[in-house]
Image (cartoon, rainbow, N blue to C red; front, side, top):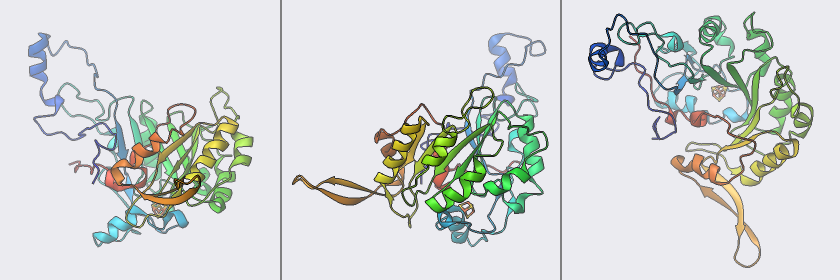
Length: 333
Ligand code: SF4
């Protein structure tokens, strides 16, 4: 099982023990610097982190073929739980938890500048969470110093779920729409790309077939927000992970890469998935097609080695396709 650190996330404990909690070593720090603790100005020297925030868990129904091997369903069923039971988690108020004492007393436990990847064991826009979402928006409203990233298969529910002060989109919230095949691309993107979202992107994961998005790239690829930033920030492709993973054809990924280059839209090959099919030389001047089985720990690095990324660094959570990569949150009590 890949852990949080090897998955590329900075190791961080939000609920550190007494021995590792900087808030509990105040006197030692002041002994070192010689300052009077009462006069010492509060300074937050902690670096930003990348962290997941699963504020609710569960999904009432699988909505499209991309859901077939949903890792949340698989995990819950393995543990004898009902994955359709949508419930708030113990981490619900994670972004607004503060230190109660010590050097960082009164400061948020998640440092300023951090990126918070939201809802990876559910969907932020699921109807079962309508009653909790206003509070979730409020927590994000209180943390404009962090970036919140969410991925959804339910763009048709976004508009009705936005907060009243959303305007043309909050500058610190990024929403990506998942489109795993042509059918769902053509159902979701016409809705999603018209929404007032300040930072939006397209995710083809798990990519199940070749997908033509030229008409969307043509319309939105060079469109700009009033501040001259891109309306469509990026397109990302990835294969499927897990024991029952379906094949992802490398040619589909290259095809999307070519479309993005054609329209000047940043592209990212996020991960190969567990089974990547591609053509290789047969040694006799021809080609043969082979399916490569790629261990989980190499799926991101192999994708990166393909060299298909285009248009700059695109921040994507490496845990996108599997909770195997997630650090379980400690009990917040
Ligand atoms: S959590 Fe996401 S992937 Fe899983 S069934 Fe729900 S919509 Fe599909």
